[in-house]
Image (cartoon, rainbow over all chains, first blue to last red; front, side):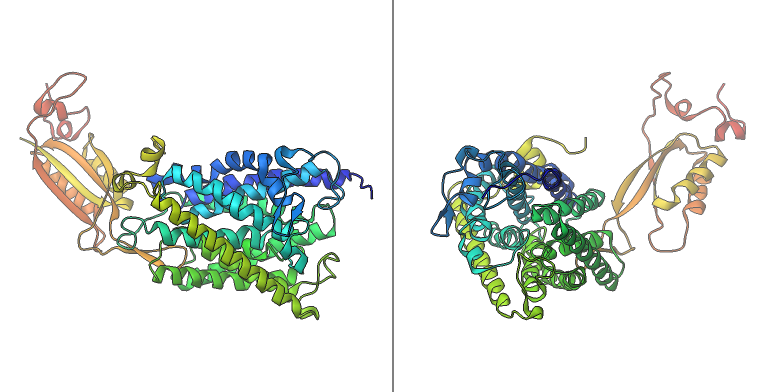
Length: 408
Length: 128
């Protein structure tokens, strides 16, 4: 069958590439504002570097492993290595009305931001060299295969009928549980639990959150790969979930004493992460429930983590891993073909089986991402070492890792 | 004899103290932000999920080097302007100063801490 380029779809997805790419600097700012001043540049760099690292890795082999011709449902082949064969014509499997190259570019932005999410777990103490090695291995061994399983043609989870519109499993659950695994291996920051480590620049964090929200329209609505009703629905559910979760977190924060700015911004991001897998399958009303439930789930996960004295520093697991797990379950509850004919129905629309598929995909994602990350982190900790020295950690990574002062 | 007053006061009292000092004719002073605590306990701030305690509170330290004939008047002015009655109002330290030298004119001693229109001029002890 011959597919033709639709200029409206193509223009929209071109814009979405920019929106999703912007989410990586936004994430950098979101994280950067929350660490101590002596580590702000380091934290920014941990995110920024992925634009460069995955920008190359994706073109050289990442896209091929994720979306290349299927090998036993587990991994793509090498037919798209170097973006050979990724041209301006639509690819019937992935992009019917936009150029193949555009689909590949759009997917690249997801591959860039996902490993950047994990960095929140190990800020203020990770050794830069080890981090670079870990990141390349993670992208190759975790992201690319997982992406293939859920979104690749012939991917085994896709074949099972899992519904993950924009990356609940591939992005948020994978990043969140990988963060948990890495935090368990690298250990806490020196002084964690003994004295407060205050955010150095909450305005930066809030700016990052706002840019993330806007960028998320590209992330979710763009995953429709077309300028159509499904994209609009995804935009609406994305917005509504973020808004609801922001309000609920504000209330939770108020119960603690006063409604904190950081809490409100965090709530918004949690709502965005939760609705990601559901955005193109559920109604805006359902997305309100998704956001409303995501906030307390993540909030109490954070408290739990803190009580266990685990220094998963920026709560990637609570904000992305756990909230998107809820999102995947919610997709299994609220999905309806009335919203997206290419999807399926969930429990509340007469298809109880979908929940089982969703939970299975979530379990697979958790076990795989956590397991591989744990092993990689352990291997690196035994060989090159995961942490900087005590002195380097005290002085701060800006100076010790990068030779720079943030605010002179 | 030259003395130095180190006045640690509340952040929000800085303008009141500066205005009051200006009225009596204290012209030369500097200040910086300082953190610390005494009897005032810390405060509770909001984190992302839950609260945390901060014990080192931000205050301002005003430094004034002056002749000891103006010392008591200056001290009283600062005390009155900086007072609220709550714990955390601050402390004043008075230390002797060995020497003061003005950069522009190389003046030393009392002359270096006298200015046109300042407290000494108003009292009628302006420099010749």
